[in-house]
Each structure stands twice: as C-alpha cells, then as structure tokens.
Image 1 (cartoon, rainbow, N blue to C red):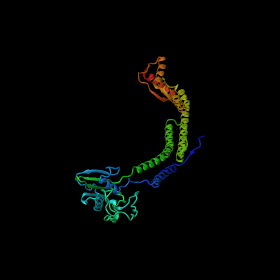
Image 2: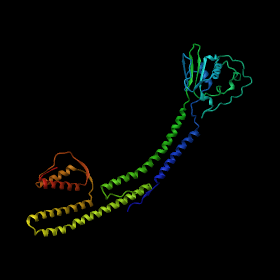
Image 3: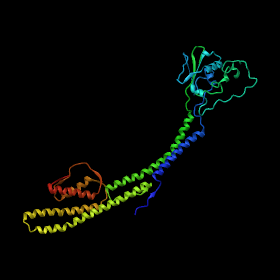
Image 4: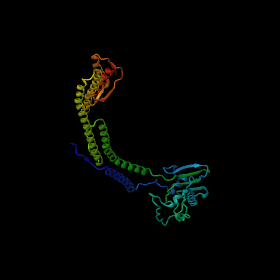
Length: 393
C-alpha cells in the first residue's frame, strides 16, 4: 500500500508568498532609508569657504572643492552653468578687489532653491546695535568687513549670502597680483559616501533575507520534478520499478498519483501480454506433436523437410518461454567486466572442443544482469558454431 501523500502549499501559494516577502523587503528598505534620514548629497559649500580659498587664507584643496591656477580667465566649464554678475559683485566686495578680477559661474538649477535632503536658507540672527559700521583693520576675508546690511544689495537676494549654501556646481575665480587666475570649482554634487554605504547595506540585508527563502522555494519546487523525471526514466528501463513518492505541492502530488496509475496499467498490460504468449507457446506443443505423428506416413524426402520445419518450431517454443520467464524475473543489475564474462563463456566452449577464440581488446565495465548477459553471449556463440563452424569474439 502506498504511503499517504505529504501535502504542502501549492505552487501558486509558494510563488505568492515569495513575491510578497520580496515586496515587503523592498518596502522595508525604502522605509529604512526614509527613517534614517541620511544626507543624500555631499555637504554643501558656503560662500566664506570660497572667499577663503580664493584669497589663499585656507589651504588649497578640500574633499569637495577643486582648486587650481591658470594663466587664462576661466570660462563656463559646463553648458548648464551661467555667469552671475551679482555674485561677482559680492565676491569682489568681500575680497576688496575690482569686479573685473572676479569670475563666477553657477548652475542654473542652483537658483531654484533647496534640494531634497538639504536644508534651506536659515534666517540670520539680528546683529547687535554696536556692530561696527566702519571697515575694520586687517585684510579680507577676515578683516576689513562691513556690517552685512551695509553691503550693497546683500539682502536684496538670497542667491549668495554667507548663510545660504551653494547647492550645486559652480566655478569661482580671482585674478592674483601676478596676473594668474586662481580657480575654485565645485562639480555637480554627488551622492554622499555615507548614503551610498547605507543603501548598499540595506539592499544587501534585503538580499540576504530573500536568498534563503528563494533557495528553499526553488528546492521545494524542483525536487519533486526531479524525482518525477527519475521515475519516468526508471519506468522505461524496468516496468516493475518502485512507485513514485507522493510528496510536494498538491499539483505535483496529483501528477505523481497519475504517473503511478499509468505505471500500474502498463504493468497489467505487460503481464496480460506475457500470459497470452506463454499460453500460446505452451498450447502449440500439442498440434505440433500431432503433425509429427501424421507426417510419419509421407515419403522420406518430403517427411524429412516437414519434420525439420516442425523441429524448428519446437525449438522456438522453449525460446519464447525462456524470454517470458526472463522478462518476468529481472535480475539484479550490477557493475561487471564484460570482457571477463565473454572470456569465461569462450573458455567453457573450448573445453568441450569448440573452435572459439576471444580476440584481444580493452576491458569494458558496465551495469547489467550477469546471468542474462551470459545467456546472450552463449546464444551468440552457439549460433556461430552451429552455422559457421567456428566463433571469433
């Protein structure tokens, strides 16, 4: 009696669960990115940093800004950058130089206001009443300053003020006393390294969470199909092979039940055919015996030919019965050396005086039934000796 089927989730349910978990993982990654509030872009640049770099009061080169000198005045390095005369006026005022010695190009998109993940302009605190209105001693950018509300047009726009960061790419240049131009450039902002790292870690965590589920799902789905293919292969070699195990998703269990039912019907058909052939072969002996008895009255030449035909038919009956018996009782297949098996058959034939010889050749190892193969080789050898007088294998 076959074992009860082990049923589980259907293929549809397993696929739905896998997709649902993958979707929830993706949503969790997005929510985690939102909750953690990691800065998306690299830190912005403030105008005082640009002024300090142009005036050589800050060491050249930072992690974000690019500083270099050239003999020619810079031009717009990118198509989306435009010259900003207002910014040039303010930089010249802060640097205490003529406006002709200042160049400033900025991205047109930077005038649109704050970007995602970046703070907008913060209002500056009120200045004390005793803030000096006269220029202070020292050199720019840390001395010789004006009270901010005395600078011309500073508060008329928030495009370039100390408290408003430069959010996108820009190029600022100052002509030095030797005529060379010192340029400070900020390429288009890139995603911050911290943001990239956290995104990579979150997606890696989601991947690690989904891989075991996907592996288990794939294995659970492919294992019954693999067993199904192996059972079909066994059925082709041996109709009496064990029935297919009924386990896995309900669809696979139903397919296994249908396969086992088909195998049972094939075995029943083969058994009926075998019984019919055995019965016919057995029943032929009686009419052949009567024919032999009746042929005794014929003339010798005709009787001898008829008796030869009857003897051949009688020889075919045991062969048919042997075939049926061998088909019913299949031997155990095991690895064997075919050359050694043939050599033993040839040796037995030469022991009784037969002209048989095994020719040189390589050893051959295969899986088979030793008894069935021995009978096949003996039959081949006997036919060769009977009709050819000698055998060479």
